[in-house]
Amino acid sequence: MKAVRVVKHGDPTEALEVADVPTPEAGPGEVRIAVSAASVNFGDIARCRGTVASVMGQIPFTLGMDVCGVVDAAGEGATEWVGRRVVAMTKQSLGGMAEFAVAPVTGTFDAPADLDDVFAAAFTLPFHVGYLALHRRAKLAAGETLLVVGGASAVGTAVIQLGVAAGANVIAVAGGPDKGRLCEQLGASFIDRTAADLFDEVNARTDQQGVDVAVDLVGGELTETVWTCMAREGRYLPVGFNDDPQAGLTGRPLRKVSMGNFSILGVILGYGELPVDFRRFGLNMFGAEVGREVHAALLELVSARSVRPVVGRTITMDQVAAALDDHERRRTIGRTVVRVAGD
Image (cartoon, rainbow, N blue to C red):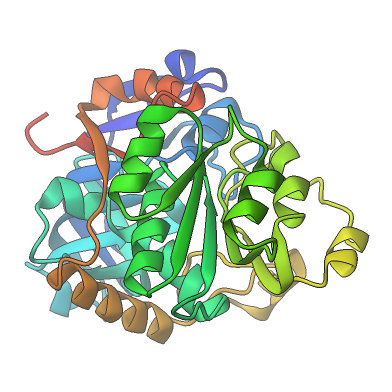
């Protein structure tokens, strides 16, 4: 089968090639998916370079965290999925940009019937992350003010829509008028981070109170400015670290959190029970039942047309490297989706 492979560490244009590799087999509790579409993630840049990302691969490996397709084979305990059209988060968050991919059943869900394969591939990660952040962790309430930093990104556009659907007053932060128009179309007011002072703008729009919830998809040097925009007893969620070369692992001074009287709420996407030793590394995922609850709630929102993935572009396998370069240079909006079937 064909797959998008990282064959050496370097810039995506140097690290990637489309290669023929053996078709994977599904093990116990796993399904194999005939992939029709897969999504590009910002973290794929770090995986190509061998720098810091939440999940790394050993060269050579296949990129691809989330896919849409039809289950064509299954291991023990997963045969009920054969023949079903699904969206899934791949095994160890790798292997999705290929004609076939393996996923655990804990990260496999029925594809939304109202979305075609491209939009379904763009759906799972952004909306599951967004729902966990806003509803499971922050307990966002109608009438509260939500700040979304990185609002024109795939997860950002999902969080905006989920916030609007929950009845929140949503303020989105992104760079440039094109991204601003997208955020406004989704129901948010907009702050251009390249042309405005974030602290002044947020306080002007919140009667000097600050925001109740902030979902930060950027991190880096902007983090502490976002902290100054929090209302007393607000909730800040560090969801992304695209502007931090160490992917958030360098940390920030916790005294400033105490000074601001706000909370930091962690969130990571991943479902399934892990051996307790994983806790030594700080990993403590939600159980599979939470994934099912989140997906059911999201399917209702999709069916009601309250939310819909934003797909900025669709590409072929041999265009992934160039697309990642555009992601790094902030020349993208929403989700970039790789069409796999028929390539």
